[in-house]
Image (cartoon, rainbow, N blue to C red; front, top):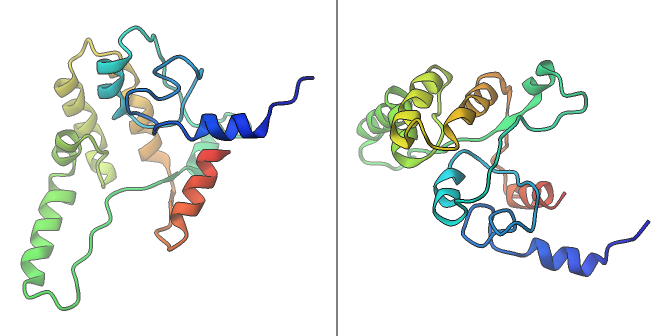
Length: 169
């Protein structure tokens, strides 16, 4: 068995982020990457020749039941305690991220904040992307993931450390 040089692996992992032009996947130096549906735009622009697929996050046994353990994140907005217009701020947040969550997700290439918006979001994104887009057939994976996930990635001071460690692994 040939051992990898950890320094070369670390240098490889310091390449540009996951969905920008020049990442290891889009330059065919990596067989897979872990990211979201929003990568379709960069892949369409910078890696038109890559025939890719999407699947669920790996679990120990690969069962649908295990997907309930997924941790997802979303938009985190607050109204400062000293806000002069808390009622208006709440109206804006409610309208944008609850009532119009599907539309906001489509327009900003983010997922919706509420589960009831998942199907309208998927339908809207298919329309925005076009039915012929390579990512369109895979949007159901993202909708399914959001629908069953039961954990939320915690917003804590060391979150970036945890995210970095998960990405490193």
